[in-house]
Image (cartoon, rainbow, N blue to C red):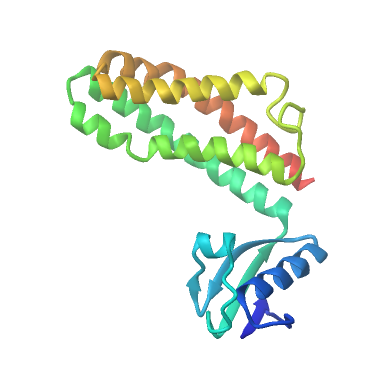
Length: 200
């Protein structure tokens, strides 16, 4: 089994996924990098195989791992998530207007990707700060009000799910037009600030 990290060939003691993963992680760590992609014979390796690597020497002929510098990865991820959130503001505004004029089905279709963008933003901030050991309540993170901001977002996302389940369209329209719009601006600014701080 051939094993590569980026374009460098590695030489594990044994030809198994477990050994290939181990030697790739060590090599990436030695360079101050993290692995962001893992493929076996050009196919993505299943999460369950990464979590519990089989000791099967016939698992594949070639393992390829791609690494990235953590700060650059976090910066790009933050900026992408910030852009996605900014785009949700227009979507939320349109969906709110549709709900107010009785276009419920159309509004719900508009919201399809919006909740995903919000969940992604929350995950990116929490995981990005954890990866770089940034205190989420510090000036480089969300600031002193971080727990409250995260809790408020979680509450609003749960409230959106409730209003959809109970068909409370008036409450959903208000949430989209006011609460989420304001939070989108705040979270976007925060993610841009984090991205700028890790670039320095």
